[in-house]
Amino acid sequence: MLTLTPPWQDVPLAGGPLPEIELPSNCPGCGVGLDREELEAHVYVCTCGHHFQLRADSWIALLADGDTWNERWSDVRPHDLLDWKMPKPYHLTIEQAREEGLNEAVRTGTARLGGRPVWLGVFDFRFVGGTLSIVAGERLARGLEAATSERLPYLLVAASGGARMQEGVLALMQMAKVNGAAGRLHAAGLPFFSILTDPTYGGTAASLALLGDVNIAEPAAKIGFTGPRVIKQATYADLPPDFQTADFQLLHGQVDMVVPRVELRPLLVHLVDLYTRGVGRAQALPSTVDRGDVPPL
Image (cartoon, rainbow, N blue to C red; front, side):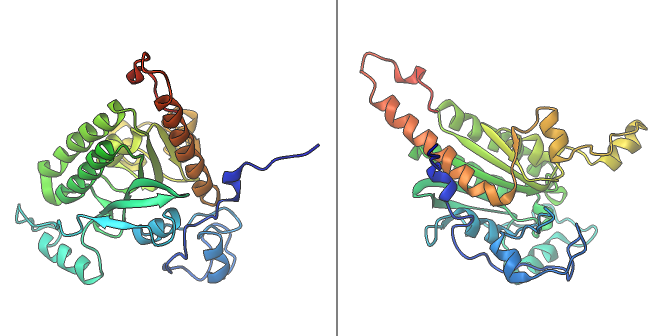
């Protein structure tokens, strides 16, 4: 019998070379010594299945076709509007992050994925725990609105501790703002693919990270609103041992699939291709058909 391999299965695991990340000498999952080159070739996934946390620049290199990333709104920067002092002045936190080459917890822009244009938003956990802030929310909302205007798919990679306490209620307001923008994307019939990595908590999980048309979690990622320790202290309940893991959330309907990183990019190329082909068929329908009633695949 002749077996045909779907074309997306031949998609490279990464769009280009991944930047180096900080690594321990041994894998936390299996204890085996790490070979950096071999690990990078497997997009920083150990043979035991342990997924090392990636930075925003690594995710961009992994997902975007080589030399197609065009960052937007990096000039929109955070400020210490509340004169926050504890546990240290917020302006010092911002300045230290800038010295390390980070200017916010979210990067957003356009790229091509498998040759198809997409909008991409990526959290970076190194900046104040990937927290949702005024600037992060603004970048996300602008990207979602632009994707709606340009009729392009939107991809989100989440890694966050929640809303940023140093910005108080102003950070919490971003949940509503980005959700409204995501709602307009959905109303326009455009796809939103959400990739949840370890960890995705708090206001980010409670807002746009779990609003995707397809919610994809990395294996063993912790996903939820409040961490198990806080829940146990508040309820005195004995929580399941795998509580809030990716598999637990899959079992309870919070995510649609758990996908190893080595399979993620080919899957996303396939999903974006399905959408694009669906739009082409919908646009080819006779004019007597109300196209607003024909959702894309």
